[in-house]
View 1 (cartoon, rainbow over the protein chains, first blue to last red):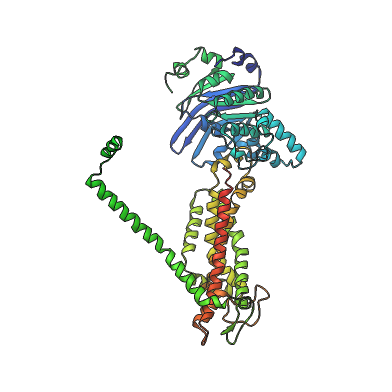
View 2 (view 1 turned 45 degrees about the horizontal axis):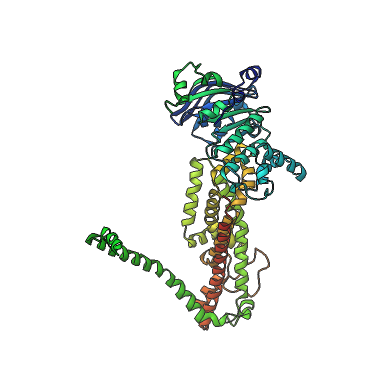
Length: 267
Length: 298
């Protein structure tokens, strides 16, 4: 697989932009088990922020707290502060609006048991858009941007949940885009997706970066290398290292475990 | 030829094999006989009813009034009364039951309150129908002052069948994968928006199946209605929910045991109509379930 140099991190532009999300001293516990602790990091506007690390590093728990999905898990307790555009998300009264501004893509694609069209029109409808013409435009735009339009444009009325894995994953991305999110979080999106589709989605993400901030959790180290501007390395609930992807992958690391993981010596 | 011999040699049966195989056959047949025995009572009941009561069946029997001290004529008031009782019971129990199931399945946190509700449902399902009847007399007939009426009887039936509706509804709600809910919540949908747009449309057939099963059970109940609203004999048809009514199940009890000189075929005819109503409901619920299985969306 050829990786173009241009596709790798572009640190200059990242440094210039402002902070989208700031996490201070975050700790997550399930009952008496600590999932993550002492996480401090910043995600900047219009960057792709990669998070790599082996299983049980706390990556998914971390994402869950960013849009307050932890509210649904009574056994999950969260300490520390998460500032979304300067507002502590714990103080957000309208948590639905917060979640609406953050798009999420799961490891296993979840096509809702609705038609392809209605999957993408779901959020716009919740926002009160009922005009068919207006919805048509949104659906076509989102499906086009997620590189799925050409495959499904003739069968928008068939069930989204019956598409193939790779198609469903692009459908969930289209659905997330229909939220017009400021932040898009992807949790190991390529787990159930074939390599060709993965590359197509990666191209989509590079495009989307112009308009939104992206957090990319991945256990494919090379995927972070291809896409992320900066990358954090999580291990056993700790954030071991954060740096520009270029630094991390060229050995300019503070902790030798980072290089060990990246080069495949463990994990 | 040689080849097959080699294979046979490899799979020679030992004594142990043979005895294991025999035991296997024995148990399979034993279990099958037990399962097949289930068909017997159904067959016997149906054939008896058809043979002894089939001659009674006619439009006239269904749609005319009983005459001569219920020893002749039809069963129309009882048939209509059963429709009234079941209909009103449904109007009460379905909204309450579905709402309760939605709460338990979609909203309830795992705490003492939820556990108390679940315990109440289990216990409510275990209360004998005659106890429900006495509860109905105390609560609806006397305390709420509905008197012996369709309303009091239907409310008693509704209380009694609530667990059926709740359990069936909750099961069909929970058959919808959790991932769908989480996907919706992640997009900023409230629980209600999720229920209305994704959960309910995909569980409505299951809920309907439960409701139909409730109808078929309610149709045959006798004890809960005999003190609360169903009458031995009334010459007039009910005009509102505050009237008393005759009912098919009680009518069967009356003509089989309480009235002298009833021709033998009459009670069998009544029973046949009753069981046909129930079987019809059950078939509808089976048809619905098969339809649901065919339209699986994930």
